[in-house]
Image (tube, rainbow, N blue to C red; front, side):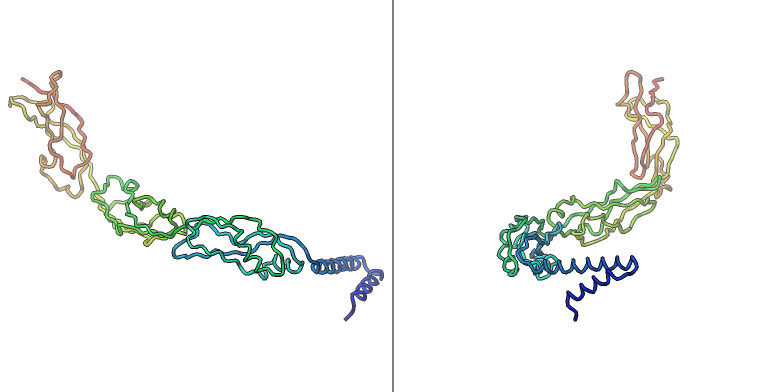
Length: 325
């Protein structure tokens, strides 16, 4: 094997040997590379360099009882002194076993003093010296893992129905409760009850569907169900526009009459009762003589009977006049 002096002499003679310009440039670059390499290895052999490195750490806790809400620190910056080779290997992460930090109840304290790790750090780096720890405190956010059972409600206000349709039953949900599991603060932040939304679809018939529960806002929270079944009736109401008789009641004089005796009414009727034909049984109008306005001899018209399947009743003429002739 040739010595370093022989290699350098050969490079020198090659440089002065007539050649093309680009070949001389390659020789110059190669010389710089060789000299830089010699300098680099020579420098690494020296001792008492001071630098900063990131030492790996890891937190130990029971994941069945606690959950980290934010990313935990996994490096601890330290200032060290040692030989070039030793510091270079540490800078690349070689020869450094992570320091374990055992946390019995991490939800009580949200920090750990770095000074407690000095002994473990010194023991793990026997070939270099620990000068000081740059961060005096390690902060973390680890909370208790909890479960919470919350009643489920359906957002009926957001239900979109086709024109002329209404919900005509209570809304039944299966299941009636949802169980959430995750960090204590995040789980307790959910409202009570837990609201499930119907989405953007409109309904024109009875509903018996599965609806997805809304986003929980964090991958740290789990629910025991992903959908809730909602069951309710949707009924169409048909518009009616017709003339109805008005009955005068509580009048001592049976000869009294009212005008008008028939008025136009508007209402909507449950499609399931369209065949109901008993006029005065499902809807009747009356003028109560006991509410007579003496100034103008008028009485306000009221609904005497209005069955539950009739909605939105309005009367075109709201008052009638009593005739004494």
